[in-house]
Image (cartoon, rainbow over all chains, first blue to last red):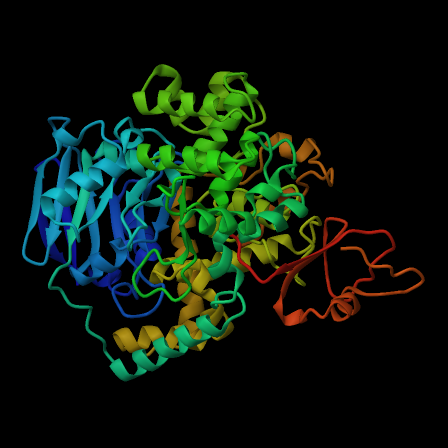
Length: 570
Length: 57
């Protein structure tokens, strides 16, 4: 595999051999290393010295189930630190098939225009895309496929990315009807916009999977991995994830009092039953939509859905838990139809539904919209897409919206909006939000469901739990594996070792794997420290330490000294 | 559903057994909205919710 460097100053693309120090890294780990090695930590995130990196995981492009996630990264315009966001869809697998270990986009076009990058097995072309300016991600993908072929994968930004908004994500087309997967967090859509890159089009026709060092070992391990996923009560065909998708957890999070409601002012929502996984499944199937579909080819979990309107017309694929929380209960909205509409707009404009939902919640608290009134939020989202002054404020995310609008209840950590678990009722997640190099990010170490380990409402053991979770996810994010595919490899780390050795023949042991996880976090923490992050950044918003959250009336009270010591064991 | 458990000291595990639910298929149990372990006692007049194995999104 090679590194593909695209210089937007000179509008040229160049293949390079992979540097030895990058050779054994993939996805999130590779992004951290490239940032540490090549990007000045104090650089302006939207300036010419930042780099936008696309990287498949180490196992990307193989036949392993659920391994094709695409990591996208750079210095975050939201957090000012390291950022890796990953998404499902076909992007990770296609890049690996095209022999791309990392696509590194550097510089900025002098003419301020938009470009598209086309990569196939035969050519790389950087071409004008001004005609796509102002288009949403759905139409951009359609136009790109009209030009390059219906089977191409399209990675694109919408209006939010073009306006360099902190809430902008990067959209990627997926398998079948899963036409909008988003690497949402951290404002990476703005980084892509700052590079003048409207779309990356991947055409992997005629390419092969990466070669395997020990095909027998890999295939046996991959078979075992898939079998365990299929037979797992969590991920199998009768499991909650396949049956209900991520929305399976709505009822439980609500019952535990951690479901963000009306700008994180309460932890349970009176209409949560209407938003549950069961309800989503019922409505979807009644109307002729789909449940239990896959976002990437060959995934045996298949947790996605295609949510349709009353006429059976697709609204969004897939309607997910975090979006239901941030665009639903957080805005006082209690129907899946309304949430799906808002979700569709976010996806089209290229917005992170978590960041946008949090910013809209702040706006409602400021009186610019009404909780429970979908149309008032549609109007604000349209402001964002049009780039009005108000839209530009909200599009910068919840932190900026709070400062401009004079709202103090702003659910952010390191400048990034919190996902749909209020940390006052799920304190392990609060530790992750505060301390993770990624900022408030549930995928960086989610304590939900850690039954038997730690009381979610207590303070004891939260920091140890968070560190364990933060370490564990680094290997998923670096191999391209979906978070939901973790049971087999967390249950038996040797299985992950066998998969990696089968691919590369590195002769790794479980100890190498554990060391790898630590190294990823250490690189990220080092970059953030050099970028100016201090322990003052590893804190919850002050109001969450003082304002009790109903129904448990708890505050976030994990001591600062414990937060500061989270990584001392690394 | 309502269960009359008056006069019984019953744990979450006992309750699951009485309901015919396989504990290995249970992800989270809450008692009066607090996450509970299987060995905890279920007080009178409480609300118990039983959720399947699942992941955070």
